[in-house]
Length: 446
Ligand code: F0G
Image (cartoon, rainbow, N blue to C red; front, side, top):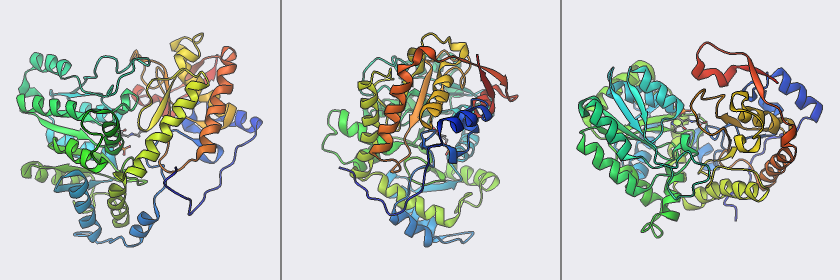
């Protein structure tokens, strides 16, 4: 049973086949270059694309735009304390702003930072400090077929190996990303979180949680981790985040807003350093790059995030999409993550070699077939990473209905049926920074 009904609507339209073909060509076979109004179901990202609740819109109108000491900031501070258990909060314009502020205060040149898997912007911010980002996923995290409850976990063993080599004094922090976006949105268990806490203590490092999708993660713990079936999502989230020394948060995910983020810390000294950097890069520490109204909406969204009906709707919708696609015979990373289903384009287009970007070919076919926009996370986005050629279908929160999900399933099934006829792509124009190529490069069919 859905936990919402609609109060406001937005028109969408499926351009006809000929228009889609023209749009795709004009976009250089890169769906980032499409106009959103030409997309029918937009699954590019779950970041900042969700629908706010009536309570959030009401909070927005009550936003206090004072430069310093805004009442909306007080609301956010109280929500972070109640929901996440952190008393010291500094808002930022979004998640990467939080990363810049916190990692700049923690990391020095030459340091090493272990993470279950770095998200792109996290990796870039660690590298930007002159440090070495080291991924420590568990075995099977990148195996589309291995079924396990917590494939997002952090491998303490892998991290220890690296720390033993470089010396604990060069490891200022250990980061745990929940859910693990770069490992197909897989969850992290509370048991694993406790193990990372012990490891951080052992090497005297600050334990940071990237909490973007903390509520989805708590839902999986509630469902899958022994001993947590009777615990509320709110209690699980508080316990899990309770092991950390600091949080980086993109409010655009589980805080249910279109923009915003924050850093939360326990230590007074770190709090001071974070505030100074926030003033430099984001804004005065009681607004940090956000309008008062957006702080207020984020405070309300954080409280809604841990309500069971809200998070259950969300994770079950994603899972439903995964199950329907599997029934239709589409090769997937399994099980589905909390925010997205990942299609194994390499398996679907086994005749297209990796260097001809089977994932990007699928992203293009989804638009051509049904006006659906998804994102490639394989060879095109991560050249040479030797990861499976996956395409992510990320569902915005509280936005699409069952009919939209059915349309996505029908679209994928139609593409799968004529998979043999799909050709690969080659890059014809790309930006200077290889890391950013998938956002703007232009391609052509081969
Ligand atoms: N950390 C994780 C795990 C993320 O997934 C993201 C963003 C960020 C940090 C950065 O947050 O966008 O607010 O600056 N992920 C989006 C995505 C962009 O599509 O997965 P941001």
